[in-house]
Length: 349
Image (cartoon, rainbow, N blue to C red; front, side):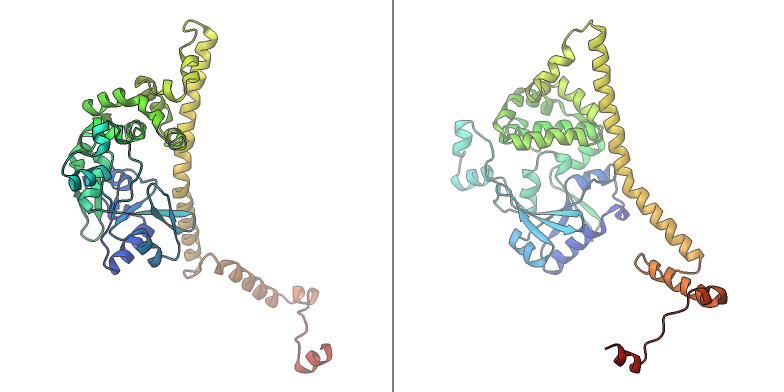
């Protein structure tokens, strides 16, 4: 699997180049690398770096630091955001290494991550991520994929697999269960059997997570262009009974009822329509870029190769003035304003 450099966002590349100019390591990371390797167009581009959030803020005026549990930088290019994070380590693993044994959370059975601002190395950062397919880095200078977690073979096999023990990873952050569903549905992947088994075992622990995070991840399932497939997986894994029990009751009620069957058909039809509308929205930027290229081609054909968007209106005004001056009848009907001489300017003043 190869990445086409032409598919890399120019602003993300600028962020990486500036960070490297100031002696910071920086790579593309996560979903954008995964999607580029699968031949898909990434929804957005994320960067990971050795620079701390404060270092990043000093280098970019168009930067804002966000988050408490996980501090990272948003670098703005108009409406576009390049999310830039610092290499981090899993806080539980660091505590175990420093203490020479299991952490207090491991001993008590509560592995939920409540703090995540411990900086680490690139390899530690890759290992702390959720799934192997999301733990890949891409070096834009060497054009190489850096794989610390065996994510490339899983991408080639089209498999969603946790990094490390799925029992521990889902207990650390149960929202990862919803993310597994999202990636399987959006990228048309299968969930590795051991990962699937522990998804089912720990699905009730989603209730431990902040409601805002769970809601946002649920909405992402609907916005990802694979709402219908996501809902099928939520039903299959019984996650929908936790997230929206009323919906499950409606889908399972009155199996033999013609009216209930109509409602179910409408429900799945609405999800399919939502997927189609997501595909249209995703294609809109490409259409706009194409129309801009067509306009540029027309202007080149008209002998105006150097015109940009802001210059075109001024050029049109100049052309009207030339036509006006060349037509004696129009010039007589609309005489030009009298030129203001120094004497007239003095009189007016």
